[in-house]
Length: 285
Image 1: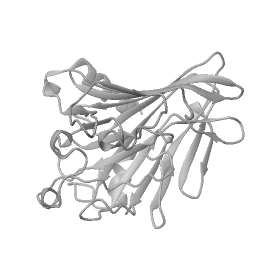
Image 2: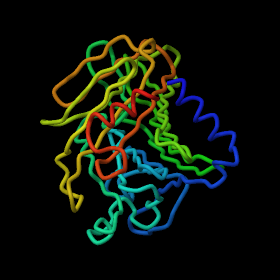
Image 3: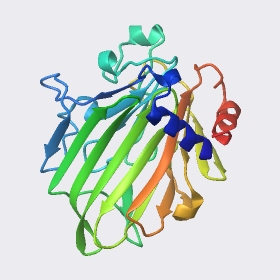
Image 4: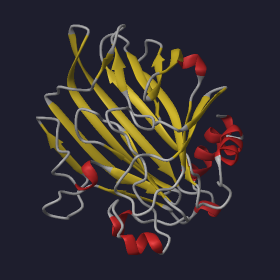
């Protein structure tokens, strides 16, 4: 975690080695194909109307998107070589592009949090950030970073209505992304996050991280590849970690803010042939 914080600070400061911004962002209406900075909906569901089903960001190593619906889950776009692809591929490269070495939508989220998605915990069960009176997604590209935000307004929670902001930031020159959740409420809340997995997936729990490796049952990519995914967190921020049927679940202490880090890799990337390689990488963070 300390290494991650140091790398993020370097990226934000913008030292010469990171002068070229290797991040990007994307948000557009399907019927217009015109990039916008923000979109909003009183229903909270623009899943079918927005390109790649919600806002997206990328660095040279991976892409991430937030689903614009009740899930507010985080999905992954895995790459086989370091390059920016969102602007042209729009999350769904052609089979020909994939044959040439482009990435693909290998990850399968389903109804889970995906990789580091955020929900609430009411003491007994998970509370989706839904229904809402308004849901707004925004994206922004800065000097050495790009980030996406999703604000869910007036979410019913323990007899109150609260606003929750989820922000995902990618950094130029580092594989990891930071996930933050802010609760705008009079009382602290408990957040839920984690990482999902599937049948046959290898998993490992370590000090401050949970990692997975294997095939996802995705039918969008032209070729199936083993992918690794990991969430890194401060154990002091959470009261419970549990392995459920389809995801690891982390429940936070009462708070108005949490942050975690997420990362992913693909077996076709140099240095990530198997679970052992991926775990060795994560343990060094």
